[in-house]
Length: 200
Image 1 (cartoon, rainbow, N blue to C red):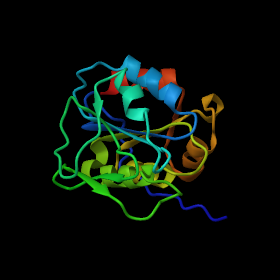
Image 2: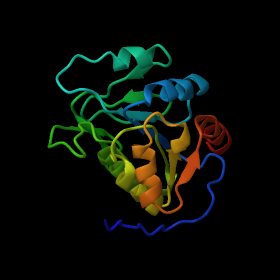
Image 3: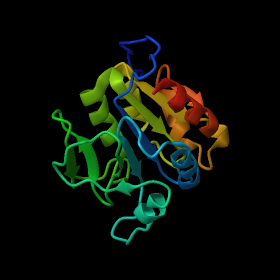
């Protein structure tokens, strides 16, 4: 199968404070590592943190409640401004994107990679709006959602991180990004935490 390779427009290593948003995507096997990551982050992050997780459609989800036990996480409303110092979780059964004016857009269009919310949709919008100021992280999962979006972030000059597949419960999602993207960083959860602290 032909694999598209993305052209990276900015190879400069990010300086401290270089990011205006952190976006984290995950699916099967990602909840435990995401909880570790959130536990390690300060409550009052300088930038917004946006989380996109695959959840069963049309089934009541406890995901928001579980994650909110770690951090004050909320699901954004359509047209709501993206604010610093906030943790957001993509609502169940909606694609979550960020508009040019840095407001959220909820979208109920078709599934992408069998998923809604789709990580690709969020990452792609973040790449377009934030460019080199974006940090996106792709965790464990059983399909390829998020790989193309992570490539778009890197191509826009942002930073894309894939969880080391050897540490992932389901390696397909981070491995897809590694196979597709140039210059993706392959890090364990402990290394991701250190990266965030030293580079944001």
